[in-house]
Structure formats: structure tokens, C-alpha cells
Image 1 (cartoon, one colour):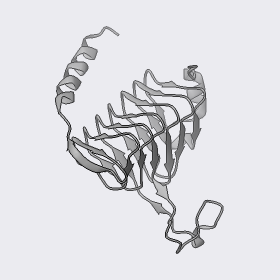
Image 2 (cartoon, rainbow, N blue to C red):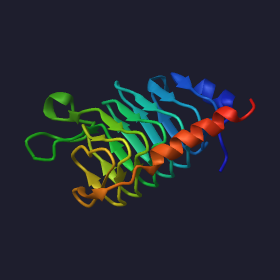
Image 3 (cartoon, rainbow, N blue to C red):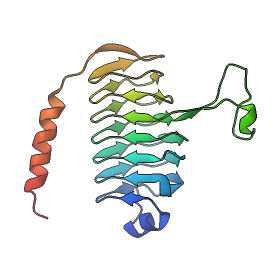
Image 4 (cartoon, one colour):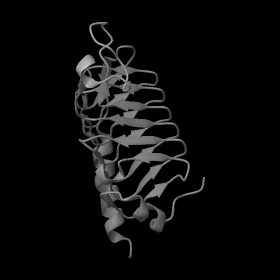
Length: 192
């Protein structure tokens, strides 16, 4: 995978780019001025990040795998140590499918009923391949979403959910919190 250089990232006009950011040159970004990239992140091939008015904020130590999309007018936040497996889609905007309004962005807003709402992906969240997260969803710290799930409602901390629509199946272990502490301590000891 070929990565963008620091100069190329700087020229794209992101609101902020942290240290050790690796972005595939095959990824696509829209409204970079509304995108904030933290330290130690990796964004793989064919990802699309289209920031709306709310923007996109990506914390530290985050991986966004191939073919992911983060799209919409609402704010999308990925907190530290979270990750998106391949083909995950986060939509902070969604058309009204009921038939009471027209759909798609080629139609003026007065004829549509698009829902815009922020999405928050908490610390240590992992979202499995092919999953979809809809507007207004908050996925609590430490939660895990199984592959091919449709997340229509918020998910509690350290919950494991799966299915269409996603439902709670059990709680996730909290060992990752101890591992995070050890990891942070090991990073602090490394010479710069």
C-alpha cells in the first residue's frame, strides 16, 4: 500500500494532522477542512471520508480498513483505540425511506426529509466487516459490533451486539483497559 506523504496531507487542508498518520493514496476525502486526524492512525485503500458541517474527528491509534465510508452532515467521532473493519459504513445523514418525501441529493431539501444526527464511536470500539451505523447512534466505550450488523440504536459500554438490527448478545471483557494502561506506559518510556 502506498501512503500519502506529510506534504501531500498538509496540502489537502485537513484541520489537524497528528504524528505517524498513514493514509492510502487510494483513499478519497471531501471537505478536509472539517476533518481532524489524531496520532498513530491508518486509513487503508478505497476509504471515503466525506465531512459535512459537523465534521469528522478521528482520535489516536485508530485503524480504518479498506472500503470504509464515513459520510454525512452530522458530526462523526471515532475515539481513541477504536477500529473499523473492511466495508464498514457510518452515515450521519439518511434519507426518509417511508415514501412521504423524495430522496437523494439531486432533489432540493424542501422535497426531502433527510435525517442528520451525530455519530460517536467510543474508545476501544471494534466494528466488524460490512456493518452499517445509522445517524444518531452512540456506540459506548469498549463495545463490539459483529460483522454484517445494522446498528440503528445506541449501544451500551462493553456490549457485544450483532444482527439486523443489531441486538445485545453479551458483555465484552474489560481487559483492554489494563492493556491500554500498559501500552501508554510503554510508549512513554520509548526514547524520542
